[in-house]
Length: 298
Image 1 (tube, rainbow, N blue to C red):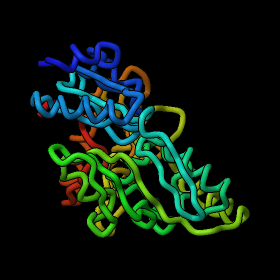
Image 2 (image 1 turned 180 degrees about the vertical axis):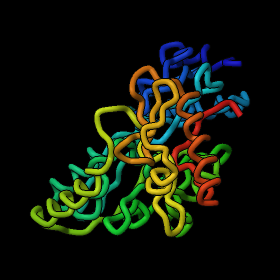
Image 3 (image 1 turned 30 degrees about the vertical axis):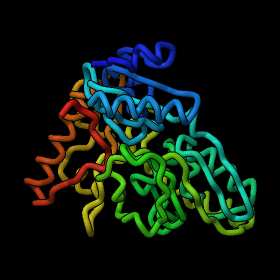
């Protein structure tokens, strides 16, 4: 199945790479193939070859919004953290590689006294993943508020520039999720700010996050909030706080977090996901949609 990928890139392609350490939930099995190229051209060449050989590929960022299944995940996983890591600032305009971690980008904006990215300073994900999922914190800001243009790679088309007007953003999603593409660069327009005001907004973000569990690995919010409701409150009302399956537990602090108490397997996490959905649907007749992505072989 690996074909010329292994032949041409013996120093880059890794076989059966453990993925759990690359995710914030710390669960899951191995990638059949894994690459962390140092140059963008190298990454695109590997992806192009995978396309030609019919090999399924995925891009991993900070691993903060995914649950990887146990066993071997078929296909190729590519990490752009090394090859898409540049940041450039011109006035209130920032161009950043998709592999840049959000806290790093937020710190740069603060250093330059630019406001708009305060909501992102504690989100453990990459710019690319945040754009695809329209990461944000309600009235404190979302990625869609900042994006001017993207440079993406599309199989068969190569590099393509997309303006923000060509992308539909929704609550924790975007039209990019339904298309086969790789985000390479993101151009953002921020606003001149004041360090004291920026610090005030960051304090508001911290206040919001005080209710989030810490100390154990998690993937962040598991479910999207249904219109008019909070998923965590619905889960708490269903009597599920603290319920465990193996090493996975629904947090006693916040119902919309599943934490890894130690040695949890992806299957145990997903069993809890199913349990929550069934119980909330039964007690409140509300269907919860996942905010996290499940990486499986289907």
